[in-house]
Length: 111
DNA sequence: AAATTGACACCAA
DNA sequence: ATTGGTGCCAATT
Image (cartoon, rainbow, N blue to C red; front, side, top):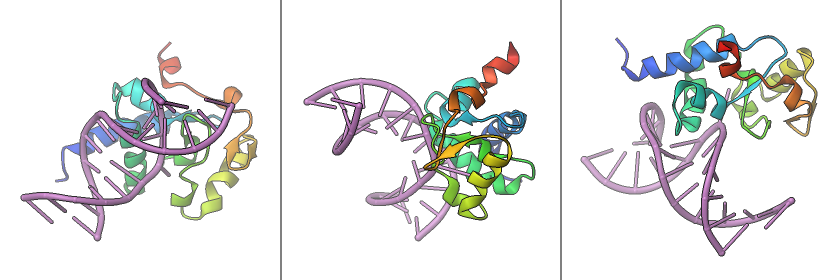
């Protein structure tokens, strides 16, 4: 049995897993969607735990700035950028160029 | 057990 | 506009 905190991580994993192909979202958006108003950091923490999960496209999750802050945490630092580019997301200086176009909001999914 | 850090976000100067 | 400092909660050392 793991800690109950896992429940909270699970919430984040679910949302991240829902991110469609070629789309990205921000930690704050997920936190806001889950009501983790102060959990932007916790979302990133959950991503770190994403190692426990299998299908967590963490590369589709960036900070509110659209910058690939956590690329260093992947299997290989370039993996995040590589994957995003493969999905049609344009990157420049470790930042998403068409962030506004590829940005996907979880709340939008409910609409 | 206490102190520090951390894949962010927001406010103030 | 840019830089710096604070808040959040949990994990790690």
